[in-house]
Length: 245
Image: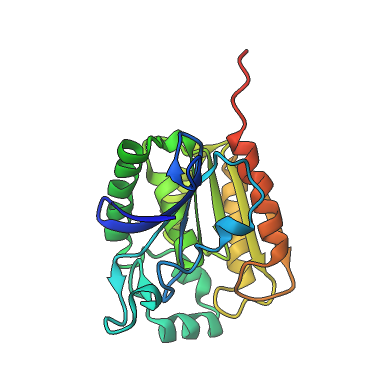
């Protein structure tokens, strides 16, 4: 594994022919959740059963929440969240109304990711068409927003315990991604981002014509073994060469 700067973001890079992102195989980019360090999801690459050529890139969010923490443990965010306000909205039944809003800071986070994706293509020979974008929690929201707004379509989308935001915009944008393979997962007992929000996002994408595979389980806010077990084959399918007609 190596650490490198891609655009404005520092990323951990693994897999590929040299186990440091070498080669020209497909790439899985995973954005971590709010309050997690940039290393939070890195261990996943060792747990996934994928072809050797698959590469993994784990960018660290640009906002530092606790500057004095050790680098590998520094909690970060893609945009700031009022956790107390979010929990109050969920408790009072206002989660659906909140999902229609665009979080302050999302536009800036997306700009960082667009620059990052340009660097990914130029420095790792990874055009967006060979990239599966995904994330966990806040990272899933960011991945979904980027995929729906990008000029080109990625190879796939992975949304782990995410939630909808900017719903009117996403509803208008999603049909242009009809047919895109999407792997979604959510715990039925999620205390952070309610299961109903995951269902709402699933239905929004499905109605727009995206090819959504939905995984649910009885637990909370996390990534269970059952989801890890399916993520490997999902990536392997994206690694298969296109069949010429």
